[in-house]
Length: 366
Ligand code: ADP
Image (cartoon, rainbow, N blue to C red; front, side, top):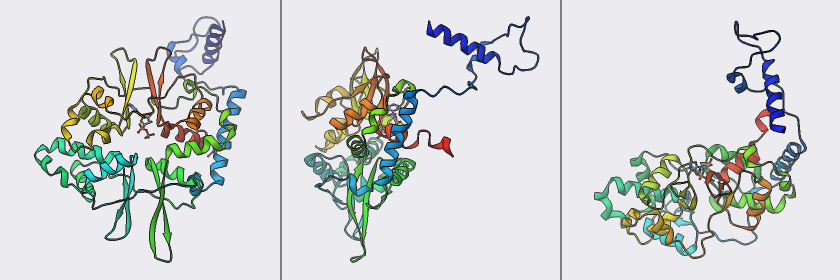
């Protein structure tokens, strides 16, 4: 009933739009509506519903909160920082990451006593691609140093990783806006010690930590009830997926080309089975045996540690209120959007969520 009513209302509304010359209303008083007219943007603004007002109030509360906090406040009371010297080999660094259960670390150049950028899983993906293209050099892989990674990136002609950093005293909202522009996924907090005149890495804040900080401290996240299907955040077109039989190396290649950090693993009918993540590569490489990369995705996933948290899914009917609930309780790195039959619909990354809570409606104000 209501659909029919809305459709009719739409036709009436569009028929009042100016018609191109010579193609205007035909007949006596009955406007002629072509299918293309229905594609035109609506001119009348939509009525403001309580759910829209609540969504705006929720976003405002989050932004106001972020404007009052600095980056220090995101850090837990007690934390450790693992920094890697650029003179370590890539193989040693992999072992350290695996042993410590981390996937990224700031680099330290002891010859200049300076922060030398952030080591992330993308650096390892580049190493994989490099040896795939230059198999003759694979014998040298054990001697590859972290300081050689820049050379690898240069040869591969990939963009160097972002080197942005921010002061721990920076306002969180400003630091996040800076991060969004840069496409960096983590913010290293670097402070300057005026006594020793040296810079010092204090910690690194991740997108998850920021979203969790919001989830725990801002009650108004429960106002964000508009469904994902309406706010349309995430990626729903051309989602890159793979099968259990795909080769890890092929999947890595595609991930680097598309600049994504995970790939849904599906059946031929698009039913979601699992998600292969860029960080899964760390576990595969730690033995130093690069032939593991010819494994199938299914075999690689079977190597995951027993405490792997699994895959988080949501539906197009979920709002950010329930997603923030999940973030509050669990260490989520992304959500895969599925329908009631577990058929893949899209991917919602943490950067998509951050982008929405920082930017949505902001441009319209200027
Ligand atoms: P993040 O930026 O949080 O680390 P990603 O790098 O995975 O997450 O996502 C970057 C962008 O690419 C996001 O907009 C996300 O929706 C999209 N995306 C993520 N995975 C895929 C995929 N497999 N296919 C297409 N787009 C994806």
